[in-house]
Each structure stands twice: as structure tokens, then as C-alpha cells.
Amino acid sequence: MAMTDGTRLEAAIDEPLMKPGGESVRPELPFPVLLNGWKHHAGFLRQRIVLAAAGGEAGLEDLAGQLVVIGTALMDLYTGQLAPAEIGDRVLAALKVDNRLSLDAYRAWVQAAGGYQVLAFPEDASRWVLRLGDETGRYVHVHPGRWSPATLRVRANVLKTAVMLLAHAAAHGGSLDVARINRVRQRYLALSPIGALAGDQGLRGVIDLLRASR
Image (cartoon, rainbow, N blue to C red; front, side):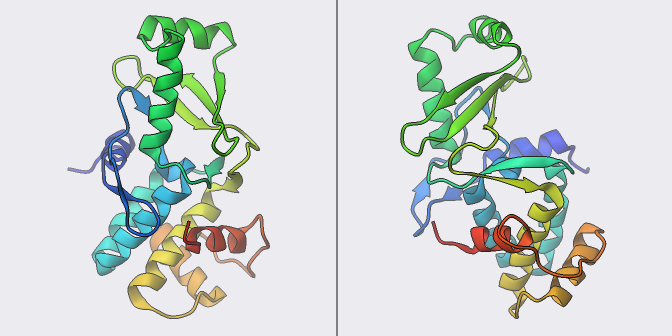
């Protein structure tokens, strides 16, 4: 049976993530935090690239299906050193200190500010937007703030292309030229071809970011 986007996201959240250098980090996000690593966490995506490439062509096909959860809009991608579980821990610690972790207290706090609140992390000055999520489950919905330090504003199709391209190259070898980019876009993502690589804020920049060892 095919998974829904929500089911796929919940499964992805609880899969293992590695820090650079192979250091394991606690895989699960602490309940009740929800953070979509596919849309908002570069380190999560680097690990997904490695896992997909290790699975060969079947892994690439699975990755293409999982990338659907990224959607089609602009998003903010966290590029810092904190793993998803570490981000969740810091959010929960802040909420506990101010007695805002219960659903009723959290809902009232978020709604009092027009539907969202913002936390800043001193480690890298990143800012995190907190919204009300699914009240029957992970109701602390977290994503990076727009133009926050340690983030990159990126288009969905650019992000999907970069992830799919790097996984394909890791699985099969070869260069990252425009011809390959277009083959990957058409075969796995059903996207139209591009004419050239853009600069730091476009596809080239996202490829370089996700290739980096951080």
C-alpha cells in the first residue's frame, strides 16, 4: 500500500541520522516536535543521499518518491550543525522552562502572537518558527525562520534536483554536468530540462552545500 505524504514524513523523521564523520545521533525527534527534515535540514538530506545511493537503482527510485513531501514552494533550509533531535531537544527545553509544553498552554501562547512564535538558538544564532501542528500528535510544528542565520532560501524543485542528482552520481559515478542533471530531472522527478547551472543561490549553490562535509 502506498504511503501518504504524512506517513512518509513520520517514517523519515524516525530513521537514523549521522553527524559528519560517522557519529551517530539519536534518530527520533522528541515528542511532540514535528520538523520536516526533507524541506528544512541539510544534514538530514545528506544522509538520505548516502542511504539512497547505497541502495542502487531501487534506492534512487525510493528517494524520488520520498522527495514528493518537499512540495513545490520556496522554503528555508537549515545548514547548521545541530541534528534534528538536538533542535527538538532545545525547543522542548525552552517550552518547559516557561511552562508552555502542554497542548493548552502551547496553543494559547502561539495564538496570542498571531499564529506563531520564534525561538533563537545561541549556538549558531538560527531562529526557529513554532506553529500549532496536529493537536492529536506532534503539535509543536517547527521550521527555520525566513532569512535566519544558518539557513538558505531555496526553491523546491532546485532542492529536489540537487538531492536526486547527488544520489545518482554517488550510485553510478560520473560528472555532474548539465546533460546528467536533465536526465535525472526527467527520469526521476518529471521536471523539464534546464539550460545551465545557476550561481550560489541556485542549483549550483545547493549542490555545493549538500556535497559539503559538515
